[in-house]
Image 1 (cartoon, rainbow, N blue to C red):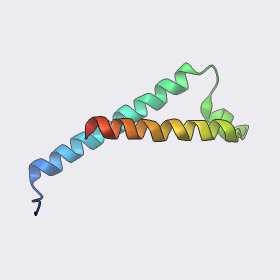
Image 2: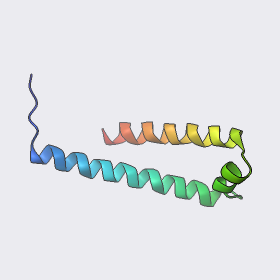
Image 3: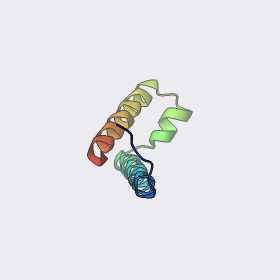
Length: 71
């Protein structure tokens, strides 16, 4: 079975990619605003490795959720 690369396929891929990236960035922004402290400051300046691991897990799970929802 061969798949053809059409303009419609490329356009829908770009639209869903931008939509997923936008939702992903919005989620990270909301997470930064909801927490009582700056996540970036805690991770970069204070070197909080545990928080970095938790945020990495959240990023991975958000990516899987958005990927499944868009697919």
